[in-house]
Image (cartoon, rainbow, N blue to C red):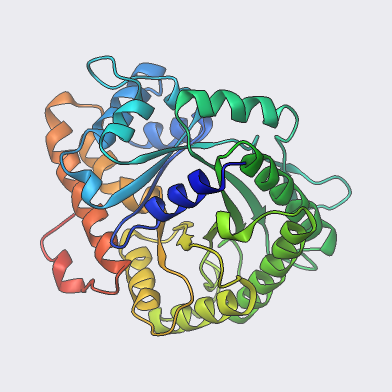
Length: 340
């Protein structure tokens, strides 16, 4: 465990005014997104799209790290330079998704546990050689009738902590992502309650497994009304409740918190981040680790057409810029006027 390397990776990822691009969609997720725009999801097309994002001029002004998928970290940019090396050359830290996906949790209907611990030590060593300096593991927590159960919370916390310990052993910075899903008709009050339960379980497990919180980044879900809830909470309420939960559960020693967009619209994800980052007295920096909320405009503009690459890059650059401003509490809706 190289403490200096881990600390340097964390500091670089949490650089003021920058955030993370989550480009770690599995092949199945990429299939769905490509199908929606009428593009065949082949390895070549996925490489071309990731190349579009990574080669966007000056994107390193707003992006500090990119989470890659196994397929992507083994691919190369136009010209033959491996993506990980290409990103590192721009001062962007390459990362890697290492979990095996959420599977049904036995005897717990409606709940999931993330798999992928088998062989993880060996895979991390391979990813380190390929250039990855941080990793990500996602757990999913569903809110519903009588769920989440303690069984689900503890099972996912255990997996997250074992993953984090293995990462630190390999000198790869772990990003932990215990996501409380937006799906459902639950109130924002219920989401706040479940988010706090989830984070308390997670940090108890991290301590039990001797994980150094100084060398971990939390990828957090925001406290939101369920997407089918009759009342949608406003921006300020979301910010207040989310930060309150984080202050109650996340150690001040942690180097930072990044947020997932989790099904929010592009502008909602930006507005919520901005409201939180503008708050005073935060014990850690806040930023973004968005997938769809960064990529949507670019994907819709590109649609597999080579002649649309530059326009798609402009759309991606704009969303990255807006979220970079939001991470400093400096975004305003007027900056979006006339932009897709």
